[in-house]
Length: 342
Image (cartoon, rainbow, N blue to C red; front, side, top):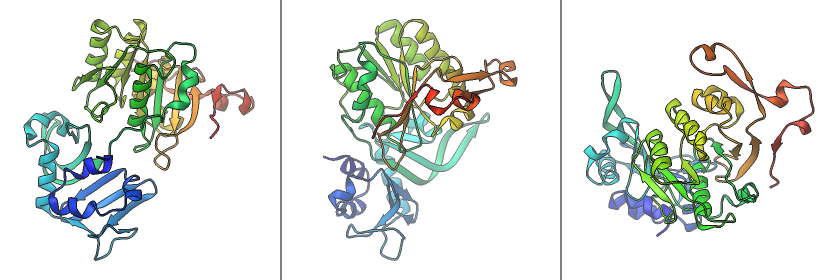
């Protein structure tokens, strides 16, 4: 069964039947299936949104033939994604998503239920964004030279949503653990959301599922003796603290984060702290949703100078991070970064 078919399986029979009529060439390119209560069903492609009709034809602009989703069909899809146990997914739902047992993740939009200032649940579900998750073995092949010395550098994989960060991370874990990068490494994957290992391929890794990333990182170092730890979506200061402690114990980390470029990195406090501490040896920027899983460039982690400011007064070490090529009159060729040839 293909990645698209696995995602379609969560839909009610009527929608399944119609989406299975989409051509194979188009199915292979779908990144997300979007359902909206009493609204249109749409498919996300690298070039944008398209709406299918009942015969599998796709339209750039919706018309009367476009497939729609009823409120009842949306509710059935949501329950299937939760495996008919919404209660067991309360923590995920409070963060706006649900992960199915097979590793497929769906974003959830509805009415937030708050308690003591924080979201504890979501009710009146109005839309679902189902990611078409799958294995893309070999997408990390171009990183092979980074592991030629037999050691693992700390890497931060960066890109916009749908740039293929999780697939890229999954393939790094697979290749490190099965010896494809030269030797077999002991790899621990802290899979908080169950999305990394859910589609398979990590049978040679130690996988901690459903564990918060800070606790999972420390648990791995204490009990699993990993050569490297991998985690998805670095985003909190606690996670950066755990990775820093992890490095002090001699274990590098490979993580992903949402950011298109250095300007967006500077706007995110956790990433800014990680970079100011030189936690990552290299920054790998992916091309984006138009070419998921492909590398745009690799930057050296020490090409940033620290500009001290008021952020340091709040317990940090830097206000912002500046590209050393922008801070210096030296020509671009003097900057320490690697642009991989296409």
